[in-house]
Length: 205
Length: 205
DNA sequence: AAATAGGTACACAGACCTGTGTAACTAGGC
DNA sequence: GCCTAGTTACACAGGTCTGTGTACCTATTT
Image (tube, rainbow over all chains, first blue to last red; front, side, top):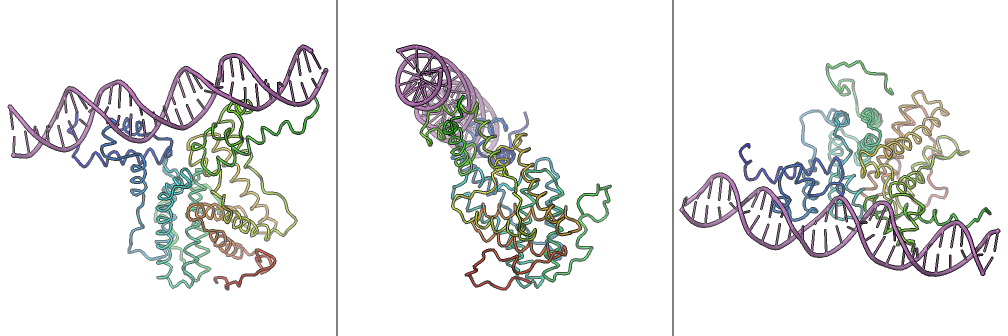
């Protein structure tokens, strides 16, 4: 038996496992027994760290709430890079859509869940907006909303279709919207990967 | 057997009620007891019409699968009208996102659910594509995909934010994409409602 | 009137769920 | 050694869920 993990590690292990199962299978589909069994601990231990399943769900969503980080890349690269990141995530086997949208879809009228989901969506929109302001876009508010639509649209489409090309489609739409707003989008900003040149099937466009 | 017109009403009543509850509260959140009680019938009667809850869920999704209907309006009006319809639906109190996306989010790995969800998304994309072909758009495939992204993006955003303006944002993005593809989008095609009472801000760009 | 179809009432099996209670065990710190 | 904190095993309460079994009722048809 490996040495018992450090004290604060247990709570993290619970949260990490709950995160994975909740995200992959859904909130209602995963019981606390399942989570405990997956880690190999007793259900009692889980309840010693989280007072209820609701608290665990809240912690799961809080954990998923990672605000977009600052970067030294150009605003255009950051905006378009978002879609490249999406494409990479879509290609991962364990991608299952947006955890916040999924939680709202599953729990519906729950106030606190909706609140954190709105906060998350708004944080990304504001991130877009600030980058657009840096670019001197006139109506940065409206364009930021539209870019957010493309992000969530590609996520929903990929959730259903399992087609990472949805991210590229969104990226190309974003480029059109940016150019239309007077932003110069040159080829170097567009390149998703510098050197990798896989034999790509002629996907749409 | 004489075709009794009111006899088959029971199955429809069950399906209608199940539809409403499943959509508003989620598939796992609604039990067959709840559905039967809502109609005022016994659970036994429900199971006499549907062999299992899964069958009821399948019937629910099949019922939600309404292919876009043909219209004599111009293609541009039909495309942009989609977003006007969305805005109306977003404003309704009982709008809770796309039932197919929600079902996939909730049930996850279920094959048959995914299949019907993909079919639904693809039917809308093809509807867009055919309209774009009528408009002489060169890469109708790609643009149809992008329009579908805007639709699903606005649905996801409205599900979280409860903001019907997401539909207008999507519509304006769609107009930019259409113009970029060489489609002439004049003001008459744009008007959402015949008698515009609201003072309209000059559209961005 | 009798038969048939469909609905009702209601209990129940079996599974799963959240959350608790309790006694015993194990490790490190004093 | 001894104490404390965390963990474990396990039972269990109380609820919900799907699905079935059974006997009864009611209306229409023949």
